[in-house]
Every structure is written in C-alpha cells, then in structure tokens.
Length: 213
Image 1 (tube, one colour):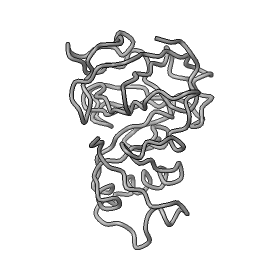
Image 2: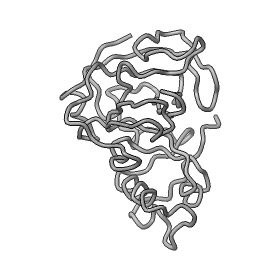
Image 3: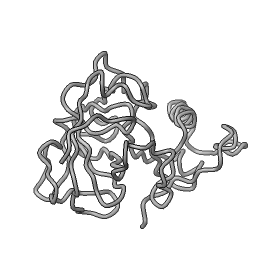
Image 4: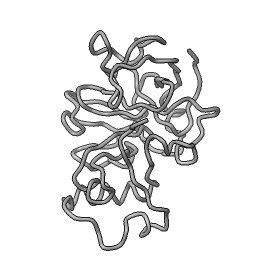
C-alpha cells in the first residue's frame, strides 16, 4: 500500500462504494487480498491499494480540470457520485456499436461534462484518491452499475494512451472522446458517419472491446 501523487490516471475518490465479495464498501476500506467484483472476470483479488492527495494536486493531471458531479442514474449509479476528470468510465451505447462494432467504450469522465446532467465542480472533489491495483486492467462496479476502469500499476503512472493496453481495451484520444460524447448528446445513436470515426481525427482506427484475456 502506497501514498503518492497521481498523474493523469484519475482514481476513485474516498467514499465511493465499490462492489466486493462482502457487499458494497467504501473504496478506502478495500485492502490487498480483498475480492472486488469486476465487469469481465467476476470476483478478482486486489493486489495493492494506492492512495494519493486530491484537490489541487489531483486536478494537476493530463485531463486538467475540476472533478465531476454525476447525478443519480446518469451512469447507472444509484446515488450521486463524484469522479475525477481523468477517471475512465465504461459506457454502453448503441452509438459505440455502430462506430466500433462493440457497444462498450471507455471515456474519461472529464469528457462527459454536459452529458445527462454531469457537471464540473468548483473544487477538487474532496477526500483522498484511491487506486485499486489488479494483475491486469479491470473494470469495477461502483455505486450500483457505474463501471470504473482500473489500469494496472505502471511506473510514474504512464499515460494509458501510451501504455500497452491493447490486449484489454483500446483508448480514444481526447478529441475523439469529446466528439463521441457530443454525438451521444445529439442523439446520433443509430448509424456511423460516412467517414471512419478515427480517420476523421487523423488517428489510427480504434476498436474498443470488452476485456477477453
């Protein structure tokens, strides 16, 4: 267990309830060896738990900006929750299936501002930031059916866009995330555009998919 600063990876704020083998528990009470319910592999042991400062330090990330207030049901969460802007959220959407051939896509919380009532806060969210470490990237259940991405531990918290996570999930660029969320807000959920999504942004084609390995 380590206490450190984070850099661009998000993390789960203390007080957030996470599904475990013995029910819903505040993330800060989870310890190495506990079993956490993951999206793809069911109950999975936690290898390590890292703590970092929040507030101004947590906002100084690659996804600079305020924490996000997520109202009940916006992300299938049962009650309001707060997310850091760099925290990746797994969304299920018809638009993702139309664009990528898979209904699931990872989006940074910061890109969701304005979607389903999600709004930036005027402070860092309060509390410490907790990172659950597994033997490989996982998606955990939080506050009901909200799905939060936990990357595997990497030295100096290397950017997920630069890390080798292709065997698990493909990532969208920040520009692609913003465009995808804008299309969600506009209700364009039934057909992909004529120009390939990633190519239109000058990026290599991406195919987000559920973790299968």
